[in-house]
Length: 61
Image (cartoon, rainbow, N blue to C red; front, side, top):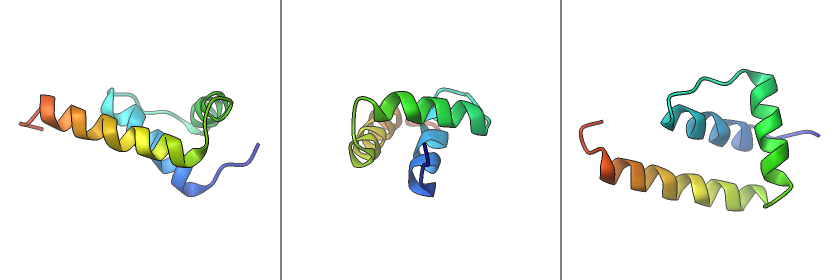
């Protein structure tokens, strides 16, 4: 399965929010699992909402 840079970047950012640093294989696995449940644009929207909520709860970061 091939993923675009937008999807890979979103996955890296989501992992980073939780303190993880994923290698390419981990990112591809995560995207493959997520794509089974949603479209890439839905993933981007979810990540934006996660980031907003994270920023709200952690204003000092």
